[in-house]
Image (cartoon, helix red, strand yellow):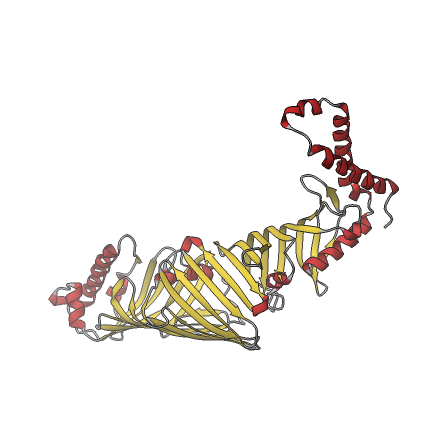
Length: 495
C-alpha cells in the first residue's frame, strides 16, 4: 500500500521537532519554566507537536478495511499461530492505546470453527503506524469467548505456549470451554474468568495462567513449558478446599512420564505415572518411604476402559457422601451417565475416618453402560457383623443424588450387638441374617428402609414400624437415635 504524501511529511516534521526538543528541553531549569511557558514559540511548538502526534495516531484510519483485515490476520497467524476470521468491520481507536476492535470474530482450526469471540481487541505498538505491513501487535484480548474442544484438540491451550510471548501478551476474559465427547455430547463446561499468556523474566519461559470454575468449583491453573528440557510444569490450586497439585510432565520419549505432588490441608501425597496416546498408568501414595496407602490404576483409551485398585489404612467417606463433596457434585452433573464409559474402582481400607465402629471396608464400584453402582461393597461392624450391598444404583432425580439398593447383614456375634444396643434380655433372639432394601438421599441425609427380612422371613410388624429415618445433628445424636430405632424394631420382631 502506497503511503500518502502528507504522511511522509508528518514523519519528517516529527523527526525535526523531536530533535529540536531534545536540544532545548535539556537546557531548561526549574527557575525559568515560567519564562519559557510564556514564550509564544514554545506554546506553538507544543501545540504543533500535539497536533502531529494525534495525526500520527490517526494514520491507521486512512487504510482500507480489506488491507487492515488481511495484514492483521497474517500478523495474528504469525505471532499466535491462530487463524482468525473477522465477520464485521474492524474499528480503530487510539485511546488509551492504539488498538483495533472486532465485535464479531472466530478462530478456525483445520477449517473448523473452534472459538466464537464476542469482542476482540488487537493492541498495536506505537512504532510503524505509517506502515501497515510493519505493524506490530503487542497484546491480544478476547472477551466473552466460547471454545469448542474435544479429544482431538484438547491440547489447544498448551500449544499456544509454543509461541513467542517475549514482546506480546494474550488475554482471555470471560469465556466458556465446551468439552465434547466423540458423539458431540457436552461432557463438561469450564468457565474462564481470566486467562493470560505472558513471558516471565524470572523463569525465562512462557507462562500460562488461568482462573476458572468447573462444576461450581473455582480453581486456578499455572503452566510453564520448558521446551529445552521437554518438560511441562503445572500447578492446580483449589483454594477453598486448600488443595494443590504440582506436576512435572516429561514428553521427550514415546512413553511420557510424570510426577505430581498433592497437598490437601497439611496432608501430602505423590502420584507417579506414565502415558502415551493409548493408555495412562499410575501409582499413588501418601509417602515415598512409609506408605500409608497405595493406589494403582490404568486408563485405556482405545477401547476406553479404566480401573483403579488401592489399599489404605484409613479412608474418609465424607469425600463421597457429604452434601457438598466433590464426588457427589460430579455425580449430580450426570457426566458419568455415558454409555461409552467403562470404569471400575476397588478400595480396601482397614479403618473409616471418624467412625471407629466400622472396619475392613471393601468399596467396589463401577460405571458401565451409563449406570453407576457399588454392588458387592462390604464392611464389618465391630467384628460382630458383615454388611454387603447388592442391586445398588446411584442416580439423580430432580437435581438430587440418591443411592438405592439392597443390603445383607450376616450377624457373627449377636451377644455383643445386644450389649452395645443395651437391648432388654427378653428381646434378645438369636438372629443370623438381616436382609433389607434401602434408599439414601445424599442431599437430605435421609434413609428409607423397606422389605426387611430377618433370617429369611418377612415380619409385618417390623416393616410397619419403618418410616423415613433422618440422621441429623451431632454424631452422638445419630447413634442414640439408631440404637432406639433398632431396639424398637427388635421389640416388634420379638412380640
